Image (cartoon, rainbow, N blue to C red; front, side, top):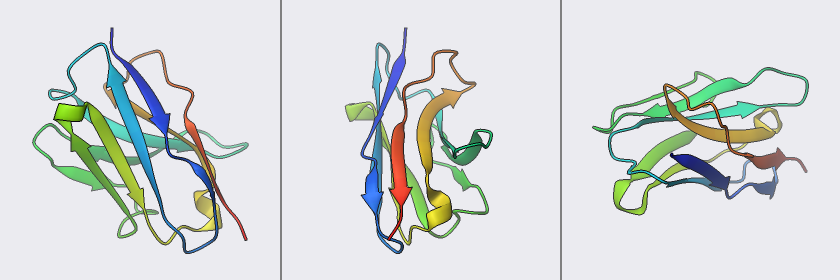
Amino acid sequence: QVQFVESGGGLVQPGGSLRLSCAASGSSLSLYVMSWYRQAPGKQREFVARITSDIMVNYADSVKGRFTISRDNAKKTVYLQMNSLKPEDTAVYYCNSVPAIPNWGKGTQVTVSS
């Protein structure tokens, strides 16, 4: 059974960058469509970015031009490069397949603050 583990979050100043990683275990990643999501305090989880098995990508309007999703199937890892971070990007970030598996990971906290 596949599981996803997110890492790479932290505290960063506005305008800074972070790279998040999503490591898959229990299954090959190559056939999965993968997405990043985020959930800010008091808000619902929202879509951030998606990447297909043939490297087609799409992004939420709020992150377009600042975030880049990528994947390394050999390492069974999906990445989210986040540049020009804003305070409104503060959230717990999660990855999951599409369709999503029911057992979400713990996520990784991203805090953008001066």
